[in-house]
Image (tube, rainbow, N blue to C red; front, side, top):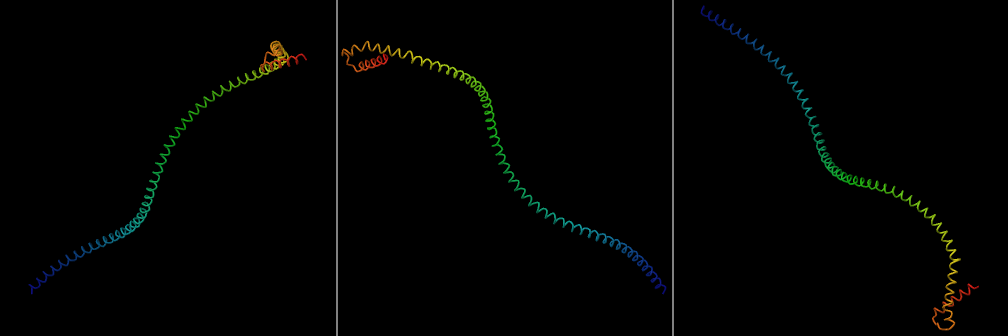
Length: 209
């Protein structure tokens, strides 16, 4: 009986120790469970936060993808525009070189024309001065011509009135004296002599009148 009691007492002590240990384990597990529950809540909050961040990132990704497509299209358009502008630039560069050459030629021509103009201007001034001199000389010559013309008119009038009749008389007298005896004697049969004698006779008869 006593042995059974001691056995029960020993088992009771053992059970009490086991119960205390189990109670401590239960408290430890409860504490760990509470910690795990807190960690789970924190993880749940972090998960929700991450889910929200993921949703935001996904939305931003879709927006970025759309923007990327738009930017890529714009990039291709810009590339085509760049190529077109590059060709236009090359053409403009060639045109610029051509225009530069034409400008150089025109500038040289302009300088040459400017020199020619200066030379022609100087020549024109010289010619104008010479023209004025020649014009003055021309007027002087015109006045001299008028004077000479008047003198010539007077001289021709005087010659026609004085010298020519005298010459005709002398010629008629010479013809009459030389050819008339030949004509009257019949020794000259030349028509020229006869015509000369007749002409001289007419002049003499005219002068005698």
